[in-house]
Image (cartoon, rainbow, N blue to C red; front, side):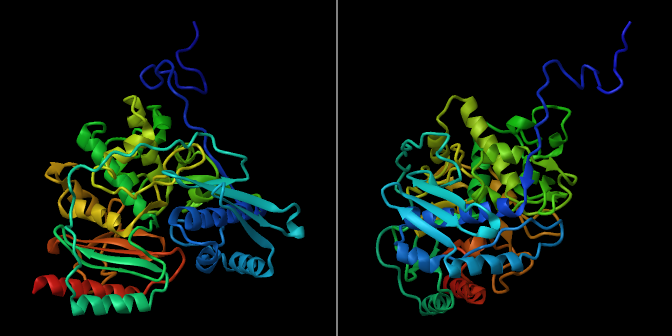
Length: 484
């Protein structure tokens, strides 16, 4: 009679049910020099497509705004890598003309080539823009794996906030905005509002009321809010349940220890196996490769390995939020609903964010970790939803207590909340410690001052410095104005 269990495989029925799904095949990140160079040129293509064909800048303005950014292997749990040599190499290539950028207005696309005989054949990458799908990275692919058909957008429910009229001038607020604009040349715009009125709305040299600007990681707060919407609709259970990612369905898998809460709070423990520039094995805690790898972002995210105990260690990465994106897509499609239209219909269209659009990857996933676009006022509308405790035009859109949950930094050792950042460490010393913000690259923010009923929005071009001390003084001036 054969043994019940063999020498290598556990055949206990409860642990290995019949037809149990396979464990996800791990993704291995290539950090070889040529691969990293390919990622650099793909990110340049993405940046130009975003600036020219989503935000709407001219080629001349895009050239003026562009700042080259080197890409290297990530650091460990406590340090970041030194990429100064790669940055210097990249900047020298830009100056010498070794990197060329070509655009095609008819295709709404950009192609980038880095020519370096020492690297062999030129390294090439492309990106395109499509309405409703933002800027899409193709890298060295020939085309998309989905058809970017126009996405039907529903009309917003109700009249929304802010009656017309010019905001009443406040010398303190106006002077603080003047100082912020003077010290922050990349700013597109600044908005200060309550649920009832706009207190100030100003634009920089390149901003305009109808100009959409990139959110980068402010989109994480949008994704967290979509998770709240699914919970409120009964499509998901508790944030403390195991994260129901489609590829994590084997009950024996270590990913069962990852909860929705740990994904929202950057405590998932996820990382990637990698091969570094010397061909050695490594662990990669990615921070942005979803913006330059032309891959299925949701599939890749689910193939991360669990490197640290979930819930135990804060490590900021995009991967966990893209697992949340995979969950959102799966829950929508389980109900037979159109994915793209439903994502917009659940949130953006419900609160009148008509300008908002996600960026998609080459397979049609809406990237959950960043790179959405909206006008200044529509970012402000998102902030108002939180000032109103998740209620819009009298209708509750988020579970009771959700706003408190996502804005509370409930773990020690980090000021990060659930896809929001907090002022617990007084990043802004003039603001209260319970101030929170959705935060994106280059210091753009949607700041929530819930006790004062205020939202402050500042949008900024990527890699341009912002005068954070002046932003702090603006916050203080706004609080003084509404406290009189």
